[in-house]
Image (cartoon, rainbow, N blue to C red; front, side, top):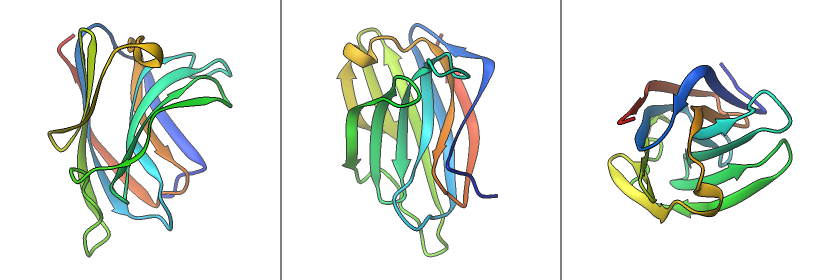
Length: 156
């Protein structure tokens, strides 16, 4: 299955609030022709409207990650932009890679983890202040296939 131009998946009853850990396993089944991101969405509201608001933490086949705040249908705020990290698995000889992603919200701190390693940590402030809301996954542009498993929230 091919996706594109981008897809975000969530269910209206999937909400996280307070202190929590959102996690999921992402298996890239086949790389795309250029850098495309996939990963976790959290703190979402109004996701079916033009007034949408959410945060996302995603990785790419190139070993990069991003943390972005989507403000509406046209505006974004890059919290962390295209940052490379050795914890991110790149495709093997068969074109596959597996990355376990997690966002830990605890008090005034947020940690972003890939394969159990913190790749970024910051205080909850600015666009990262409101982390309560819908959660799900986002797969950008044209990725030939990403398998998502074990999407869950713990610790609420």
